[in-house]
Length: 247
Image (cartoon, rainbow, N blue to C red; front, side, top):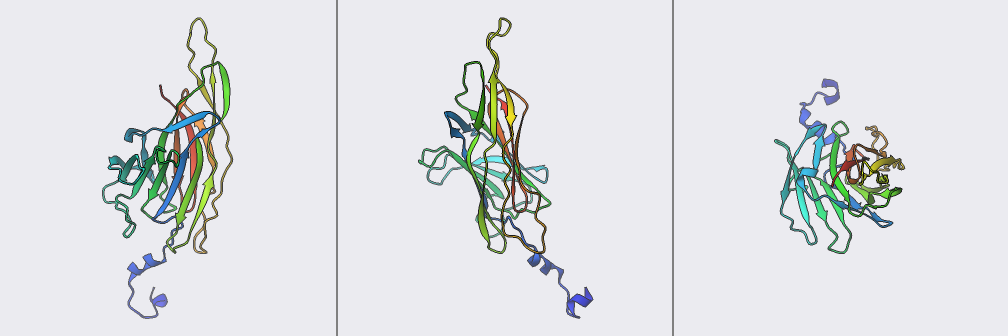
């Protein structure tokens, strides 16, 4: 330290000026709900169906007043001692805005990130979708896109910016034929693999990029709702899709 300081007084608080975040405060994700090929997935607009964790620590979820034109609902994710980054204008460290599509722009959510995201503290959002019009005839239905376009719009702490678009998770479900013992057979769900996506965010020579994001899905119960977990690293997004039971 004496050598590097050249004999000058040392103030280690200035070290924070050298920290570079590829995914900085002001980044956000826009995620369209799936509505293709006659399959209609809707966002489950309920705080009980939302979970946000940072490095495995769960934040509190609360519903706030919706004040933006066309906005249906707003959810705040908070934790004791954690505040939005100074100058980010966020009312909480993480905020989710839900639009039901009545504004003519389609049903979607916007997840805004008002904290710099560290590579060593992954941020994960989990929400639910419900298939509104499942088929009734016994058959296997494949290729259901649970989401439309999903876009990460990122800004870094050097004022760089860009966007990355990711593929939708794809699922399939099977409705079994009725039997004497079970006149109304419950549908069963199996996953279908989906493509991977790689971010092309600007890099810094002092930092290694995190692992390449990927998209996948799994199932744990019959059809009718989906949970999309968004896991954010320093410059990428990881998507997981799984099925969740819903009447």
